[in-house]
Image (cartoon, rainbow over all chains, first blue to last red; front, top):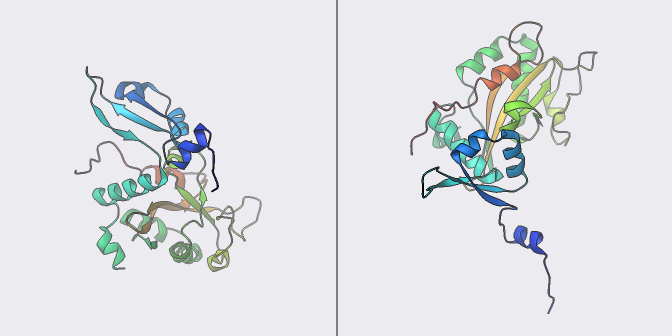
Length: 92
Length: 139
């Protein structure tokens, strides 16, 4: 029976886990360099966005996962009225 | 995944109609091409558009968009208009790839001169169409 051994990073990739993950508050995000955040996310990282309250609440996850980004930007463009609803688009 | 090109909104329609007639025809040809090859445009490398992974097609009068189909140079530069200044015109678009929904949607942000002597460039026009925080989406 073949056995494959993975070191930590390839194992994480194989399990579809983000390459890196950390928590940042909204205030920390505001103060951070946008390009640094983009680079971190484009490298496969994820950031848990938390409030500055004590205890902090989890707002959600910041990601540039290509699939999620595509779904979200499409939904937002439809919600803003920049493009027609999907049903109308697919009727073209 | 099915690919659709969203209808041009009024602003982009006006930009298209403001182009010289021969360039308008070329732009319409590229719009047809995008339905078949939505990755035909080259990624924008800098600025806010790059953070949205916006793409651009370089175009000039006399281009034959159908000839671009299948080439994997991703529209870096069109095949004609190789004068000193290169292709003048740009078609800038977002490609929303939504695999769970099963669609790719091309949203054209701007069509215009890449680097005009006066007035906003196609890039500046495209940046104006990016979402602003006051555009809230409903839950």
